[in-house]
Length: 570
Image (cartoon, rainbow, N blue to C red; front, top):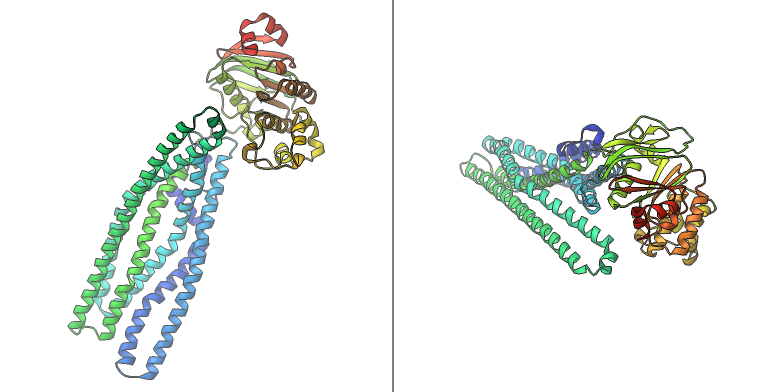
């Protein structure tokens, strides 16, 4: 059951907890009923032992002894069966709840409108979807323990009321203040747990960031700086974890001490009543046994209280991700089945871009040279509708992208970023990207990107499984496979950013010629400074200082525009 999203105004941590528990209602109720039966039977054990003493041992009746021993055996059979079954259901509730939270988080992160990753490292999101989801799921598992513990306290109180009204009242009146004190004591644990999870998530994010860039770090000799950065982050995480551990130890110790005092008071009161003759020896044994039994329910409540404190902190972090505002809004316009692919920028302004006006005819191949890399970055974000421009608009066949659903807009305009990642799968799977196309259908895209040469160099051809992020390939090979994937999508508008920076000049020339041939009749925008690719375009637009500074064919601009010449030939 989804726990919310950006369309709902964003869930709070409390709402996440409530919906998580409601989503596991059947398991929680089933485990609670079994737990109640288990605790009730366990509470009745000392009561039955007291009856055995008064009605069998004291009277010397063998029949009564056998009868009550049989009752005791039935109690143990029921409580053991209920415990095993309840434990299995309870663990299942926690695991299913955590799984559902991970699904909800994954759905939010993959939402076409984006926004969930804003200001968060990938490793931090992973920590939320693993550690925090597990902690919140544990709350669903803890609820049956709380219900069963309270049942045990109630049964004990009723049993003690039958033995002695003062002893029963002592429990009934003493438990609520004890629970309130436990709740107050758990506040520091909750706060420190939230800090611990934040620091741990940040450390995970930094570690993932450093591992992904390990080859670059080694290349520039920055290993020492990277190790130092992670060491500082890890120390902060360790310090937060130790503070949380100290808080947990103080919390559990304080609750255990209060519980011990409470049980001792019950035992002393029972002994005093027995000395006065108000209760029998069997009733005294039952009272002492119940007092000792009460340690179990109180320990359960201590555990539940600690899990709630940890779960509330983690639920707040999950709620922050689920409530992340979308980066772009959902549009209602619908594109026709056949998209010509005409692109128009009207007064586009975002980041370093300012007042960019540009018409790109359907079916043309246009180069865009950005003197400032930030301008290229902002342009790609606007074209891919990863964000909506602050000013102006991007239109596709006369329809502003802001009026289109982001997913539909990206089906029509595919933006292939320079730093596109490959997956730990076969080369063929990376190129087809879930489309189900066969190798024969993908052959033109593989050839146009010169990725067929890459396949021939691999031991199993296109069936060769690549390492994580394609690290088993060279930089140029990864670029060719990523370009083949973009070409295989066969979108009406393809925007490619620097697809050949790690490719040799001979291969780049072959890619330029084949790319134009393959994309014939469909709109292609090459955001690059490669003279080889720009020479294959119909026209080139130069962006300087965030605005259009020149527009023409590549040879003409090389000959007549100094800024353009410096940008592409430097």
